[in-house]
Length: 74
Image (cartoon, rainbow, N blue to C red; front, side, top):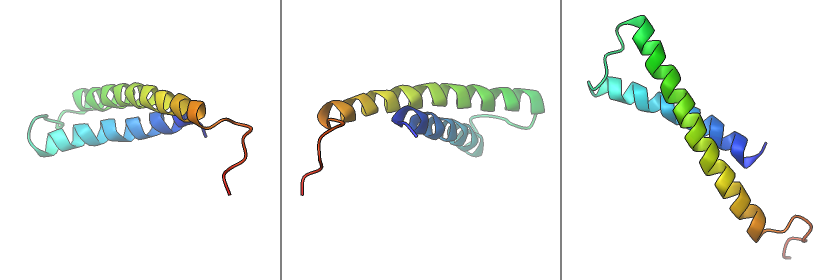
């Protein structure tokens, strides 16, 4: 799995956790079904995009500092 894929997965989870924490702290009201689902989907998409961008950038940085064909130091 690539760094981008892992970043997307983590971002989706963090987006959902952020919405649920906001609900627990009283900032959001998730008692109505349709707006609650909209909030969760929007947070998951935004978290996935942001996490994917961060994962992509970190993956590119890692590949630039660790050449693909080089042997690991022993």
